[in-house]
Image 1 (cartoon, helix red, strand yellow):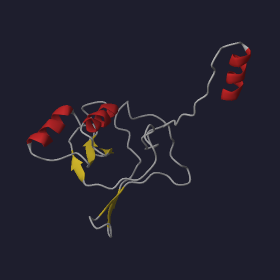
Image 2 (cartoon, one colour; image 1 turned 90 degrees about the vertical axis):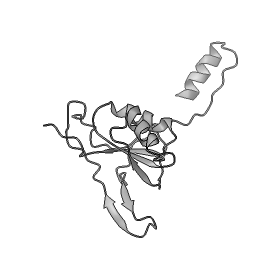
Image 3 (cartoon, one colour; image 1 turned 60 degrees about the vertical axis):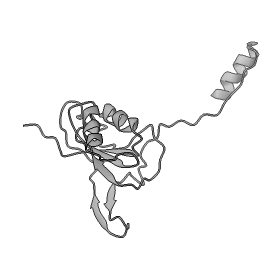
Image 4 (tube, one colour; image 1 turned 180 degrees about the vertical axis):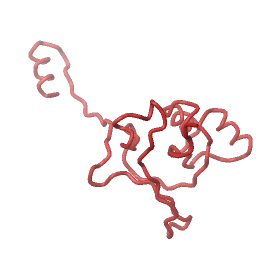
Length: 144
């Protein structure tokens, strides 16, 4: 399609038509090798926990057909290994509390629970301080 558009633009006399290759970071989880999340011992010899990446329906924002497609679509594929820090709901004040308590979050995987602010803001707030990743705690919030 790009070749066709470039050819038509050149034929129309548009000067300096160029085509650039771009990397697009909108990936989708593999159907044959779905994403996983596991916690191992610090020496990586013992599997301590494997998370369910299927969410319960918690409220109207999580009741969508895509709720069980757990992945971060605008990030490259890969693996991460780091220590974890729990940051409550992932709000700016939660990260401020960690900083005031002397708890370092940079270079760590930040675990946040559902609720109190939009999911995308949790990722943004974690990214503000150079955290390596965010995983939403999937059973920490329940309707009364």
